[in-house]
Length: 630
Image (cartoon, rainbow, N blue to C red; front, top):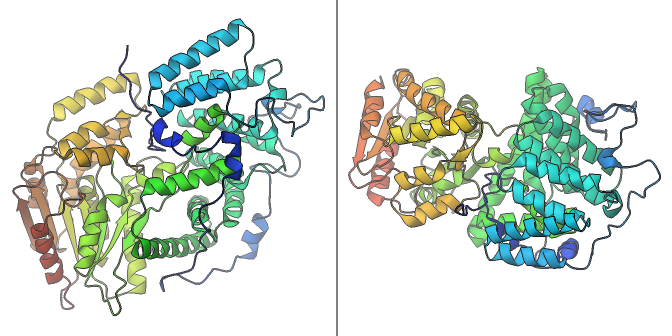
């Protein structure tokens, strides 16, 4: 018997047991869960926020509701012929679109309750066996129904057997009376789940077909704003991956319109921000400078507003765990989508994409506070911007302002459809854009770029290309020389044979080498934004990127550089950091060696006050007004 592995899904980052903890009432009643809070309305808490941009007439005209990617002339969604094909096997015999499903709406079925109990006890293999047994019995008795097929499909989906999951989902719509058992909402959710399976395999052709089928099922009926927005975002993601930017425009505009309806609440502000990110990207690639600039200004204003909201909440009630935020938003999502069985709930919960900020900030709100300098922090492989939380608190107390950014393909970008791919060059541009934004509102602000591990290499590359607005760069453990490199190379090679684009878990090994502290390893493994799985191709590109960093260090000719290396580092060889240090051409460079430091120096909850004092001293020295810019 194979050893049980917890559900692996980077897009969610939570175990099945954790998800079931949010299921506090019978599933159909989730639509009526009383809210334990009053929705917070957003107010601008930062004078950095630009005034609301007037919407140009050309953009206003495009924001009129349109069927996604379809002309008003009656064109069918992509992947469908105009010959009358109907979604989900629907007959034209007059079936009521809003027909009530036959399965119980009052409580879970007996099978659901049994599976629920097993999953709640983290008995995943027993739950799988029970589902298989129930499926076989139903087949023999010729009493297959959507409930058991949903569960059978999910059993395969959680193990990333997407084609098998699709087979069970499509079997639902092929049941002799299957469609009569499914409400309109159920039909939409079914097509959405099939589309998600195809999307995870990057089969965008079939994903587009089923996202469009879901929208065709929905028509103009009320299926919930969140579910409809999710379907439109699915179309956007597929078109972006295929670089079909013109086709992506229509669903992206609809997505912006849908998410704007809830943008006066914190839960709706982040999805609206990401809709603007999509539109800015689309118009950039279409060469429409006016519209690109409009949406860029919009998303900058939203970003500043959200960072201010986040900071205000943290200063008022303390940091809110991301898991608590996820659980709250997941309940709102379930109330909007109305799952009618445990199978539907599990599908929706494990594919729910929590939207978070790609940039977060910490700044003192004390009266009369004047920041000594601004630090932009870039995380290491597998981590995200929240990894710098403890470091930021410590440095804020020392008088600094700290921004932390997600590298493209990590953290918040993992849930941005069509943007999940790791992109180092775009990350350089993101960092430079943040530097320019800070400079626009505070031209005299001394800005330092700090990165750790992969983030250290990104910081050095960014400084080489965009160093003109920086006062200095700090690169912690940026070495490309890995310990146990042969072991990792063999692992990558073996997984390459299974599929060069198929992700596998590398987070466990990286965390084991990065820190000896069990609590930090657990924190890393359970982080909702951690990217613990990478494909062989991604790891090979990462290795190439890290090795090429040394050649770019020679382009840092005048910018002050501080490198940091721990001697108890079990992940990278210190010699690699020393080689990078030697490659830097700037005469103003300093090497800090920390004898008792592991790999994680700034991305840990156990900050070394001596190291922070030395870092502060170096920053203060290079922050003075008479410090010559490079």
